[in-house]
Image (cartoon, rainbow, N blue to C red; front, side):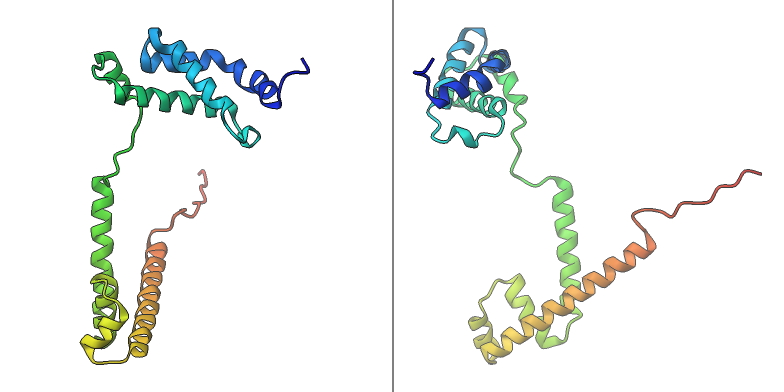
Amino acid sequence: MGWLRDIDRWFMAEVLPHAAAYRAKAVHFCGRDEADDLVQEAYARVLKTPDFRAIVSARGFVLTIVHNLALERLRRANVVRIELLASLDMLDVADPAPDAFAVAAGRSDLQRLLQLIDSLPPQCARVLHMRKIQGMPPIAIAEALSISVSTVEKHIAKGLALVTKARRDSEAQVEEVCPAFPKARSSTLT
């Protein structure tokens, strides 16, 4: 077998032993009719990989290729069988929109940040609000408030330091009131 390339040896040792898993995954996505074609196409892509030595888990790599090829086929198909649509629900494709908890937590964090900014000295609060909330560049802030850019940068630095300190202090107070790990009670039997 001197005519085998390194990638061929790697393929036989690392990829082929898991052929049943690849076929099962392909059957799940495309049905029995197209499963073998999908696996063969995945093998072709694996053999085209320029740096196969960098692949840590050959099985996981090929399963990912099978998964992606199945998605490509489903996207290109003019008619999609109902069974395949059911398997799309199993893909666990994450919705990029934040969930209700993330939205509520973000709003709560923003409200807390606005309260902390409002508690700063007036000029520092104005500058920090214009920079961090309104997104204005320091030059525009300097022009709007008739102060130098250097002064704007100092107000931003001072404001951020005070807000950071206030947030740390409030988190420390919460930790004291509600510790993450309650102290163990000594239990005595009487």
